[in-house]
Length: 345
Image (cartoon, rainbow, N blue to C red; front, side, top):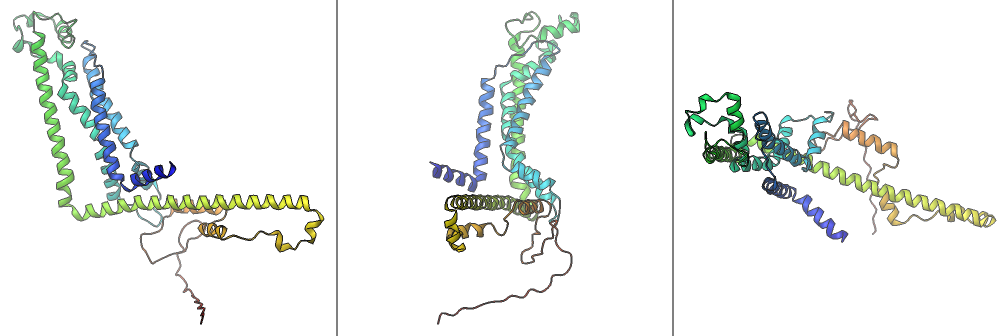
């Protein structure tokens, strides 16, 4: 079972972009389903209709947008790259913009679906603008001037609520509903068209004019993602090896103490070399994975140095790190390399 979960996890890591696109699609469908299941109840009061409709139109898209960002694994990577000290590696604002735009494009899918469905349905628009219906054009215009504005607003605010609307003598409710829903659907299809054209321009036309900058930003964005994953894998491998060697040493020390407690004088007659357990091949391999980092303080300094002073993006020019994680400023001394050849002839 664990192997199956590991294979699924590795597949999701290797196909992260497709996985995130699938998550965005699921969130878009969920937003449409949420709206269909949502019980829209207009307050039908002049001072509250607009506020209620604005909340329904704007609050859920904001929540869906934030959820889309939270579910994206690259949010922490973007924040880490933005806040890290420059050190020996300069931060490129173009790469940060590319990373944020890539995340924002996916996170905006569900909010756009919510706004489009809300406008196409028309209930929210009807509740918000029912008091702005032109009564003189659609209703009995001769009676409208005789009503005081507060009374006219109170009467029109009840248009979305058929059970309490009592102004058919002034304006037929069905006429007002059809008028406002027609405008709402026109705005909805216009919104869909504009967002589709904008997405087409961003995804297709923009890289054609800034191809070189686009490729550089895309490459270094992928590099930062891959570097972070490899660093996490290396730290995980080191932590596993560190824990394994530490536990082995603990058990060997306990075994040695028990032998000392039971043997007493017999231990004195035993050669000292026999008290030390023979180092197995597996233990040597685990110690090699430690890469010389064998204590907590050194590991903490390594992690601090990685955060404050990442290595420069220049291969073949290794520079020694000082105790504070910065490279030595002076020229490097020539190294003497000694090669030993063993012949079996």
